[in-house]
Length: 303
Ligand code: CP
Ligand code: NVA
Image (cartoon, rainbow, N blue to C red; front, side, top):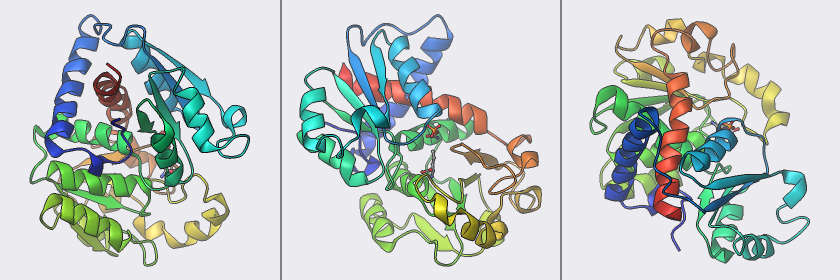
């Protein structure tokens, strides 16, 4: 059974084929609609955390491909609380053709995958966010017409989104520089894994945001406080301001650099309105690309 839990589990050429398929499905959707390649197929959406983009893009993605999707709230499932994860997986996979799950601990999607008889798609865990990464790669590819050789610079907290970008760099051949405050750097184990997958050095880490952006093609940021870390929000608000993506920082990057953010944005914290709504921002095309990138994943796994 093939799942979609992290980008490192998929061969590079298959991931690139998914990006090409996403480009195709996007064009097809915008020029008359997609063929119903998932007619009669169903997708269960298990959410342990809130969502706008992930929920709506998966639901609409299934509708566009002729299939059906339904949402299961944290209260309904109580993954590992009301019922064991192994039992949830064995029951639900008898009803549907695929499951997307958004969880706190990455181990929980791994458990689902272990026990499920249908593909499990990771819709965000504390470890990574691979569907976001595929939309990000699609956005960068559309912008520059290539991926290899580009320099993506991530500014801020080293979190699930950062780790997925790191794995994307390894799989798609761009360079990732991660600029974070001391104590909030990416773990060495993830860099090691990504480097091994790439077969070469693809990541640089620094505590200097200004130095990091000087030759950036992409400047990427995310919230300083991820879902589940809310009690640290105040402390992080004291530490992270030098890592705000504002006009002053963006001015240090080349003028062709684009700005990305997985959203939701905490405007005035990790990104200013001026940048988020400015000419270099690709925040909304990036969010919309969730739909197209995920349709490629769905068509590949559920067909
Ligand atoms: N970027 C993203 O995953 O957004 P949601 O949390 O709204 O799904
Ligand atoms: N790092 C953020 C991403 C939200 C899509 C979080 O985990 O909350």
